[in-house]
Image 1 (cartoon, rainbow, N blue to C red):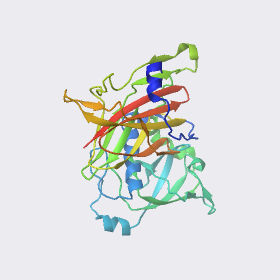
Image 2 (image 1 turned 45 degrees about the vertical axis):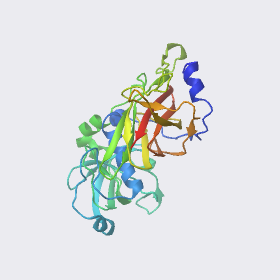
Image 3 (image 1 turned 120 degrees about the horizontal axis):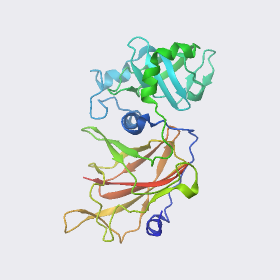
Image 4 (image 1 turned 90 degrees about the vertical axis):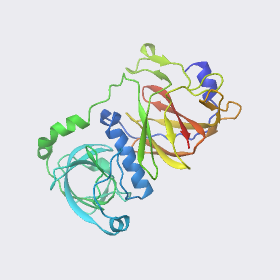
Length: 315
């Protein structure tokens, strides 16, 4: 980053946490990345109302019925690479991303294992509320139990290889990262695509062959750059930021907004930046609360460089 950007970004007190996620396939760069964030919002909120990227969740059960009912199904693990897993329902042949229960997964011998221990070809018994979010692949945030019932073989997953190839496309390390910030309101689930306004990127690991963009999302008078994503919310709302690859740390800051005579949003440059508390997850996301009337900046450190993203929140 250039000196101008660094001066504006330094002094933040966001407590960055290191992630152990080894990689993050680019399948989530455009669609699945966004939908995973929306599914995580639904799971964190404990909500069973309709949710997807602009679409309604499948199923017509009421919230009370969804909480009370438990459905059982069987799935085949067709992809497993750390936190990145894909199941295929054995009755409907529907591929979906599972949400791993907090208590972990039960092995055949009853021992508790983690998602890292799943292998391609495993057959698992699933219990949950039965509500699959409409997306491709699907999302199942309401899983309450996963149990391995057969070891299986990687050969069992071969008929689904075309699906795996479509979903899990490797990220080009030389490409500049992108991301999204997702949030839920009473009306809809929304996701804003984020492109960096500033970065220093060494995509091939060679410091002498990097690319850089020295920018800021406001001008010297605080006017927000046109096209900056706008999260329209009525009150404090939980948001999840995700990126097209695993990150090492993230810092979140905000500045209050003020109306300008030009009719455009303006940052109050006289006010100090405010660090925003956040929690990072092993799935490669950061969760924090956003409020209307602020501009937010995310400074993210990746294995091959760093990048900064911005959005505003208005009522």
